[in-house]
Image (cartoon, rainbow over all chains, first blue to last red; front, side):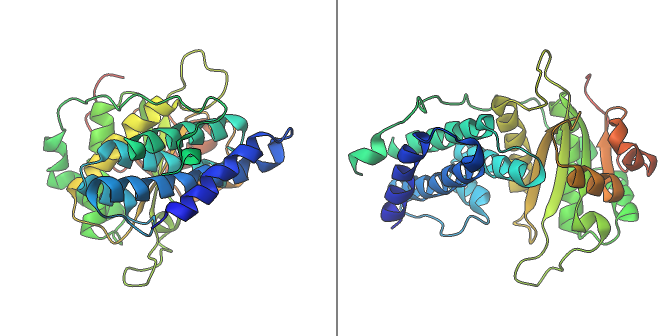
Length: 112
Length: 190
């Protein structure tokens, strides 16, 4: 399963938040929360429905198929945060916090 | 699950409210053959499924989201340089959704709560269609586009296709408006 990967990614955020100068690494932090959100979705889907998806392509539809539309919306939002970094200059701390909020919601769902 | 995975950090315990329920579906426009014909006249390379999806998304946003100002197709599909269906990764459908600025906001950003509502509407519409061979990539942006990459704005200005709008586009996208609007969706009051 994805538990080891999840453990590794999720725990990595702790020392990162302790860094004083976050500006140079905010893009990497968004990637971290994106990766963690993906792993939490896999964990939650497996935990609740006995199946998960290995690829992020088609994940929104997969979640809707499971009846998890709120999580589908959040994954779409997480992808949107990432695209904001690609197309805009949206790698500020506000964007990291948005990714964190979305990831936190997904984690809460996964553990519920 | 280990305790480390249960722990939060730096107050990352906030949650985002659910997307609110929305009003009735704009079925009449979505079912109208005129809308589909207009889109396929302008963009004849679109396959039927994608064309139907775009009409549906435009109708939903126009009817259910007064905060949405315009819907623009951009990227390789707008330029007709898309990777074809049948290859391992066909090009995505890139959609730019322009939103009216948040009252009093100093930064040209869209609130997460509003984003979730929009992703919900677009996602539900996409889900009602059969699984499409192309992914839908949505970019939500404050219509001022104040802090977006210049190259991104230039690309949209050069290639973007205005699917639907509720009013004038920002000055940086006047070239998109000049090429005409594809869909004449009846709108709810702004």
